[in-house]
Amino acid sequence: VQLQASGGGLVQSGGSLRLSCAASGFDFDDFTIGWFRQAPGKEREGVSCIRERDGSSTYADSVKGRFTISRDNAKNAVYLQMNMLKPEDTAAYYCAADQGYRLKTRAYQYDYWGQGTLVTVSS
Image 1 (cartoon, rainbow, N blue to C red):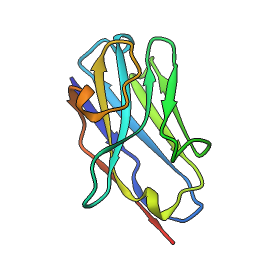
Image 2 (cartoon, helix red, strand yellow; image 1 turned 90 degrees about the vertical axis):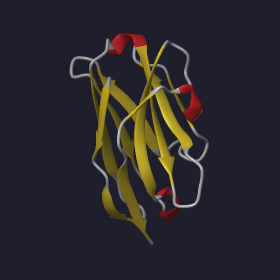
Image 3 (cartoon, helix red, strand yellow; image 1 turned 45 degrees about the vertical axis):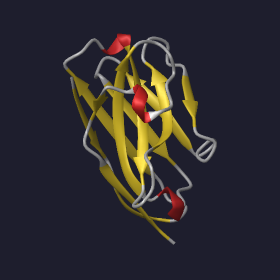
């Protein structure tokens, strides 16, 4: 199982970024994919996750209405569209995968992780 996150960068407050997670080495439809973030000195927190089988998703309260998770099963990819970014969204963002159909929001529930992509939001 391999996951590759990309799309991070520096953006001003109120701006947008789109993160991508490219997955390979497993049957995409049988997995749940999650996005997590970790700011310096803080614990890794769940941002959003999506069930590949039917596209069901969930979001952390802090990003509801601003972030949208989506998938392209043909490309084995998951995206995180982040709008109205705030300085407190600054963190390293990671995508993770776990086999099964439950929507999982905790880092310990995921077995496979990609490297992080850094998002910096300036005020």
